[in-house]
Image (cartoon, rainbow, N blue to C red):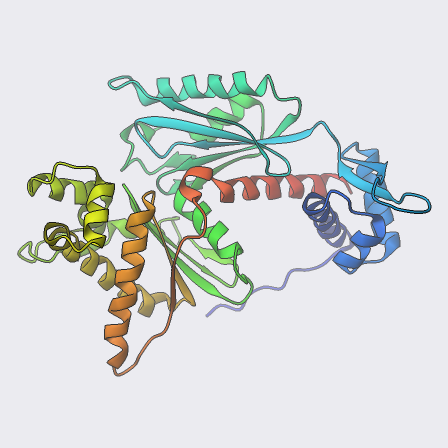
Length: 389
């Protein structure tokens, strides 16, 4: 294993870290004082003064009288300047719909809209229409846009600015980051794999520093992401999360090899429902399974067994502290997680038992794009920290 290189600390890099930490603290607590910032970040009051004074001079921070003091002189509190900022999160994970959210810098949702795409029209045409809708909404927002996150359903190659087009064919030769940079006049544009953003948010929600997590998503697409000691494993070509492309032998299919996505995704399950004459919504079928309906159990059990075997094999590859199961249909992720827990109980008598915490995703990340918001805001903070020196 290669030895990790230690970061060389310089006066400039230490100051940049302190600036970033101070901004993060102020965003977490809008009533921060200089002394609170010094204590929270374990730095001297003089260091805080130098950083804060520069941020005020750059018109990024403002200092106001606090309204919370009962007696005596009100202490000065620090806030981000009112013209900062908003962050746009755009969801490009469906061929049928493009949705977007606009947050303020403190994560308050300001605007939300979904745009249905016209069948038969080029995807790029629908995307440009959605971009115009975002611009139109931003006209009514008083703050400046400081960053944009674009949520995509497959691996993204930053070097060539292209998304793997296996799920949305019109992504081929579509340079999404360049398009958004040009349309919005911004450099802080992040193109993020939807599974990575969700995995990141789930990881950050629980004691992140020393734990490891494998996040498994099973919706209309199938993906996964491994994070170990706060580092996401993306692979040499950013394909490490594409577990849906794994080849499996599906039960009852004569041992033929197909991709995991082709047999366990919601789309695959719905095809099976149609073949079995189950003319109903997927959610209804999940309810029937929970009620132990014979047809639903017969249809889902081979699918759930396949998922459990794949997750079990992944335990031996990654050995994570926990596995988080997610889906755009919470009922599906609940059933998958429960089935895998039972599967693990059955495997306890293995010669070498393996232990893992199994749970459903905490956040409805697929729709709210919370992880994207934080990554874009952090990129903006880093940009400020490098600029204000």
